[in-house]
Length: 121
Image 1: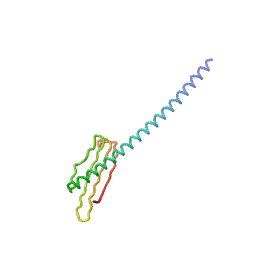
Image 2: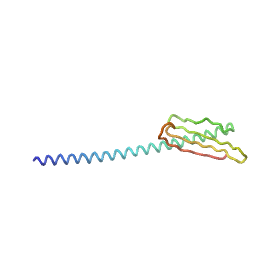
Image 3: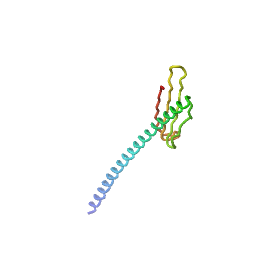
Image 4: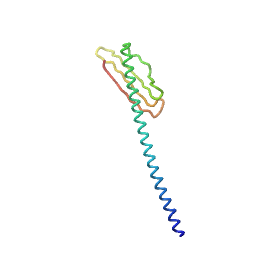
């Protein structure tokens, strides 16, 4: 009778360990999937921030025919972009606009960066 109680306790501990291992692995998998989903969202926001910078650069250029822009464009407090423009210096050269979008905000160490460059016009 003493030995059967010990066997039941051992089986209970093994069963609880197996259940705990399964729950832990599912939790880790769920956490990894959530992080990947967040990264995709940050990537899209960074791309659209860069796209916004290109559009603003084109608007400013065709409005004033100068390549003067603010140092950076903040679209909101979670993502922004930096825009650089190079005006044609010689005949035949093209306007070149480069926009780099960040998500989350550039001060954060783990940020995604997406850049777009257009040339012509």
